[in-house]
Image 1: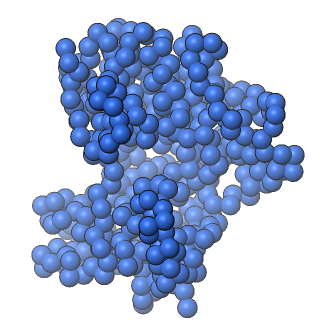
Image 2 (image 1 turned 180 degrees about the horizontal axis):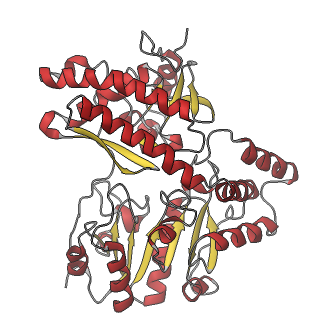
Image 3 (image 1 turned 90 degrees about the horizontal axis):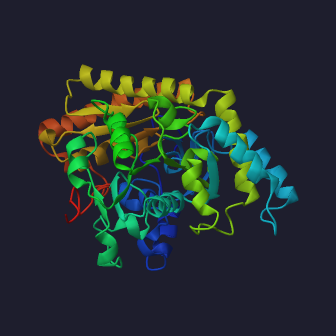
Length: 443
């Protein structure tokens, strides 16, 4: 019998997952289309590898095992799996068609909706993925300023201008690598030291998990205004989650350009570039940014339904309150167990569980916690990616499981032998490390 969301005696049987996985080896490079969904982030031998269906915040793998999901598609499912309002909007649009030979009215309707919600969205353009619009924003910044260098902080996709600063930089010309550099979050001096006379844009995720300190974001805004640099907010995570109008609304800061995806359409593929009209109007004739599927109607219908629901139901407020219960609850359990080496931090809508290396190998500790959560019907990659479908009973049960799992981690740490408790392979590092970190442009 398949495992359910309960205190199961056994780890889930994942035979069907393994069957698909064996077929994928040698057929699909890295066996996954999305690195964060791949087996490197889930303990091999214990974790499911393929999911078949979902409803609300619950998912079922191909072997029939059921879980509470805290990854939520790595971000896009802000409302939840198979959310009826959104699915019905897609179905109704499907009856009329998907992609047309001329523009569709939804392009105008959704653009108007986005402009009404996002600060400084004087103009709106659609595409399909987050890296599409971050790359478009970078191109626009270079066109508008006549400069070339880009400073970045965070993860911005797979395109050449960004991925050249990471360790997966093969295939990127050195001339391209020489135009992008990084800076430290909350370190304004690292920004000032990296700026030169050819700096076109500063692009960053306004927050990841760390909160801005000493008015860091406001100081960035001042620096960019003073030096004629385009400030770009990559709001893939903060958009429609942190607040209805994202980080710009939350912090009261207007970026020159801002990009969105993930939470926008509850799982349908769409991304948005917004910003100042005087910059965006370069898309009229000077900057080329067009795609056949930019006006694909199913995703636009889903976007309209999702944003409307986010506004009417105050979804960001709900994510904040539910996420706070989980984050604070975890920390209370860890504190009561005298486990200072693990904590939940970050913003409530997306918190992270961390493990201090002073107590052992952090990846081994994370692997053990993930392994035991999976046994009890919780799919977890170290984060609480909250959705509108995470109900009180899901939060309560999750905290009950943490209450059972953390003592196991504590015992393994006290014995100094965490691998003894592991039934699968240790997790791989999350892809965030960059090779050129804080490298300054040539003066």
